[in-house]
Length: 331
Image 1 (cartoon, one colour):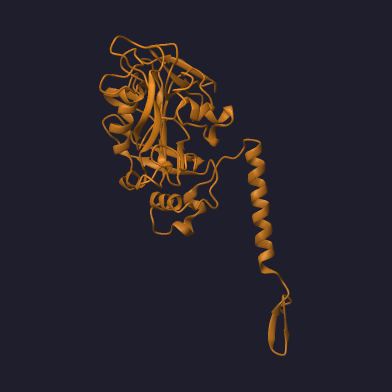
Image 2 (tube, rainbow, N blue to C red):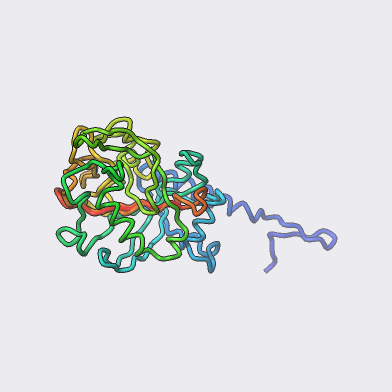
C-alpha cells in the first residue's frame, strides 16, 4: 500500500504528517488529567522506577534521584510519585518495604544558616513498623520513655533527646540499603529548645540551628501548616507545610493509625504532638505508645549539604495510645 504520509518532488521526499503532533497532544492530555486528579485529591502517585525506567537504566534509583535533585532536574516529577525501599531486619526493625512518596520539591532551597541546595523531600506513604526492645506492645514506639518533653543540659532540643529520634538514627537508618544511605543528606533546621536547670518548662526557651540526621520525623508545621498544639513562634522555626499534606485525607497514612511528630506541646512539660488516625492534630504524653512516622528521606537532602534528597519518617499509633513512627528523607 502506498505511504500517503509522504510525497515526492523531483526525487525528494516530504512529510505530509506532523509526527510530533500526536505526541504533543498526548502530553497535554496527560498533564490535564494529572491536574484534574490533583485538584480533587485523587492522584495516587506513580512508580518512579517504572515511569523513568529507560532514563534510570543500570543506575540504582536512589543515585538517579539524588542526581536529579542536585541538577535541579525535576521534569516529570509529581508530588506523590513514589519509590519502594526494602528495609532489612534489625534488632528493633522488622524486614519490610516502605513506600516513599515525593512530599515536596525545593521546599527549603537557599534557606537555613547554611544555604540548602536543590532537593526533594520523600515522605513514607504509611508508618514504619517497629519491634524489639524499643517497641511497646510489639509494634509501637514511645516518643520518650519518661513523661517528659524537655531537653537536657547536654542537648536542649527535646526531639533530639527523644526515643523516637534515637530509633530513627540508630535502628531504622542502618536498615536502609547502603546505596540509599549514601544518596540522602542530613536535614538541618531551626529547632525548638526547651530546658532550664531550675526545673521543667512548659514552653520553649528558645531555638537554634540543629542537625536532625538523615532520617527524621516531620514537625507539626510541616504537616498542618501552622502550630496547633506546639508553642507558637519557636516551634515553627523555618518550617513550612509540605504540599503532600495540604488536605486532611493525606495525613491518614497507611490507614487509620496515629503517628508521632517531632514537635512538643506548648503549655505542657510532658506532651508531644502527633497526627490522629482521624486526620486532626492532637497530643499525648511523651511516654505513650504510637506509630513511627516513617522517617522522612531527604532527597530532601544532599551529600554536599547543598544538593540532594531527604527522607522523613512516621511511626504508627493506635487510635488511642501506642504510636508508630514515620521517617522522612532528603535527596
